[in-house]
Length: 337
Ligand code: NAP
Image 1 (tube, rainbow, N blue to C red):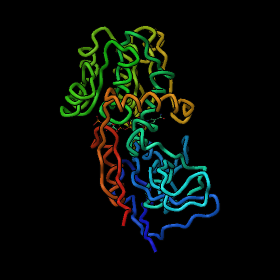
Image 2 (cartoon, protein in one colour; image 1 turned 135 degrees about the vertical axis):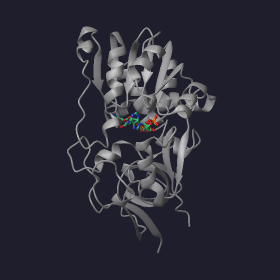
Image 3 (spheres, rainbow, N blue to C red; image 1 turned 90 degrees about the horizontal axis):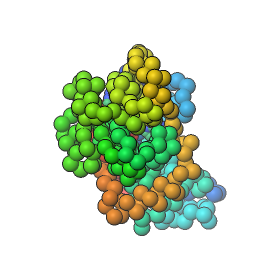
């Protein structure tokens, strides 16, 4: 028998989650039914939206079930197949992460091209975080030639791609916000931002006024709260804001008041628009075609923060919520026994 370890939701957190909310359980690796495959997961993604799924609250995606394995994006190798469409040996992406081996319908897996990029890239720049940046800056809050663009959580998975993409789309100045001096230095030195704001230093409005004295045309908001308020205050007439996430509130136990300066949205005719990446999957071929080329020619720089082993996956999720990552937070699974 092959043992497959998985992480289950042991309890729902109040406020910031802890390791006690998760349970590591050893199960028997599954056998495939007709039309199914068994995947040995090699990489899994932890993402901020998973925090919301730990709550029993209505959202755009159902909550994780208590006592059951969590779910999320993963990459792995097909080790058994009862489907002609997906052969043994293929590398696939699918949605049954948080476990070492997964059994699923072949139709629920996507074979990825490992000659175009490393398998784990399909959980980052070539996956939904890269696509989020692309859809936000081309559809939700399109960047026009000469725009000044602000990106929050700019050293993270979505943000680090978004900053570089904004430049490729014609931005004249790209500003990023991140937490702490190491990350803001990296924004300038490695990810190609023109200016960086350190949200841990406080006074975002003042820092923004210095970084973008003539204001902002496009803001990709991953943070909400104080970041959104400061950005609204800095928007130029006709500006566009993509509401992509609001991570500053994900662990909140009480609702935070919204920005108190929304009249400026009206006065400057700013567009504020939310987006969910799942509504933009039609852009995947267009985006991965471009991004794979940019990764190969070195004009798109990506980073990963890698945590080792299924047992550490909860810590990786807690880390992404605290800002422990630069670039995409990933868990490498060592199921090869
Ligand atoms: P990420 O940026 O790689 O990681 C999250 C980052 O958020 C942390 O590294 C941390 O960076 C920052 N952060 C945490 N608490 C913060 C706070 N109170 N104030 C400011 N920054 C804080 O994660 P990601 O996967 O790329 O996701 C980024 C955002 O996009 C999240 O809000 C996520 O929910 C959203 N998202 C939305 C969609 C969609 O379909 N709408 C899809 C993907 C992602 P610092 O150390 O710099 O603070």
